[in-house]
Image (cartoon, rainbow, N blue to C red; front, top):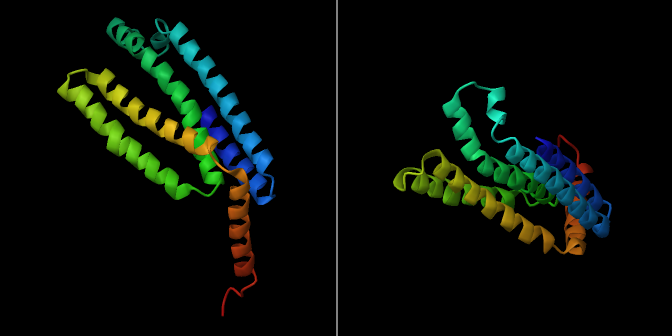
Length: 180
């Protein structure tokens, strides 16, 4: 949930910096929020791995369930790290006004890659829950890679110009009467 908070913060911060014509501040904000979220995620992932044999006992006393949880904890740790980066970069993209792009990437990665890969690994190759989870992690990893690539190749000066165009459009609309 920490990364979801960073998602909202990154969206607001980047959009404010772009609207204020501060491309360097927007770029710096992206780097800082991504690194901080990544560090927190790595710490949480390491904690899950370190506690993998005891973490399930907070929720169950069953030995079978505890063994399954311990077996799946490396995937959970990887999921925590990926989901520490991906929501933040989605927030950055929304702050830049790329909502449509993020939606297409999200749908394509989860429904085009994650679910089919998870179904294939989980059911066809009989890996069960581990296969389904690996498939979904594949979709998340693909989305994260795409968002990292696009975000860190962004021309922030151009994004400031795009934000100024959107602001001027809204300024014209603001001066029109509500009811004509």
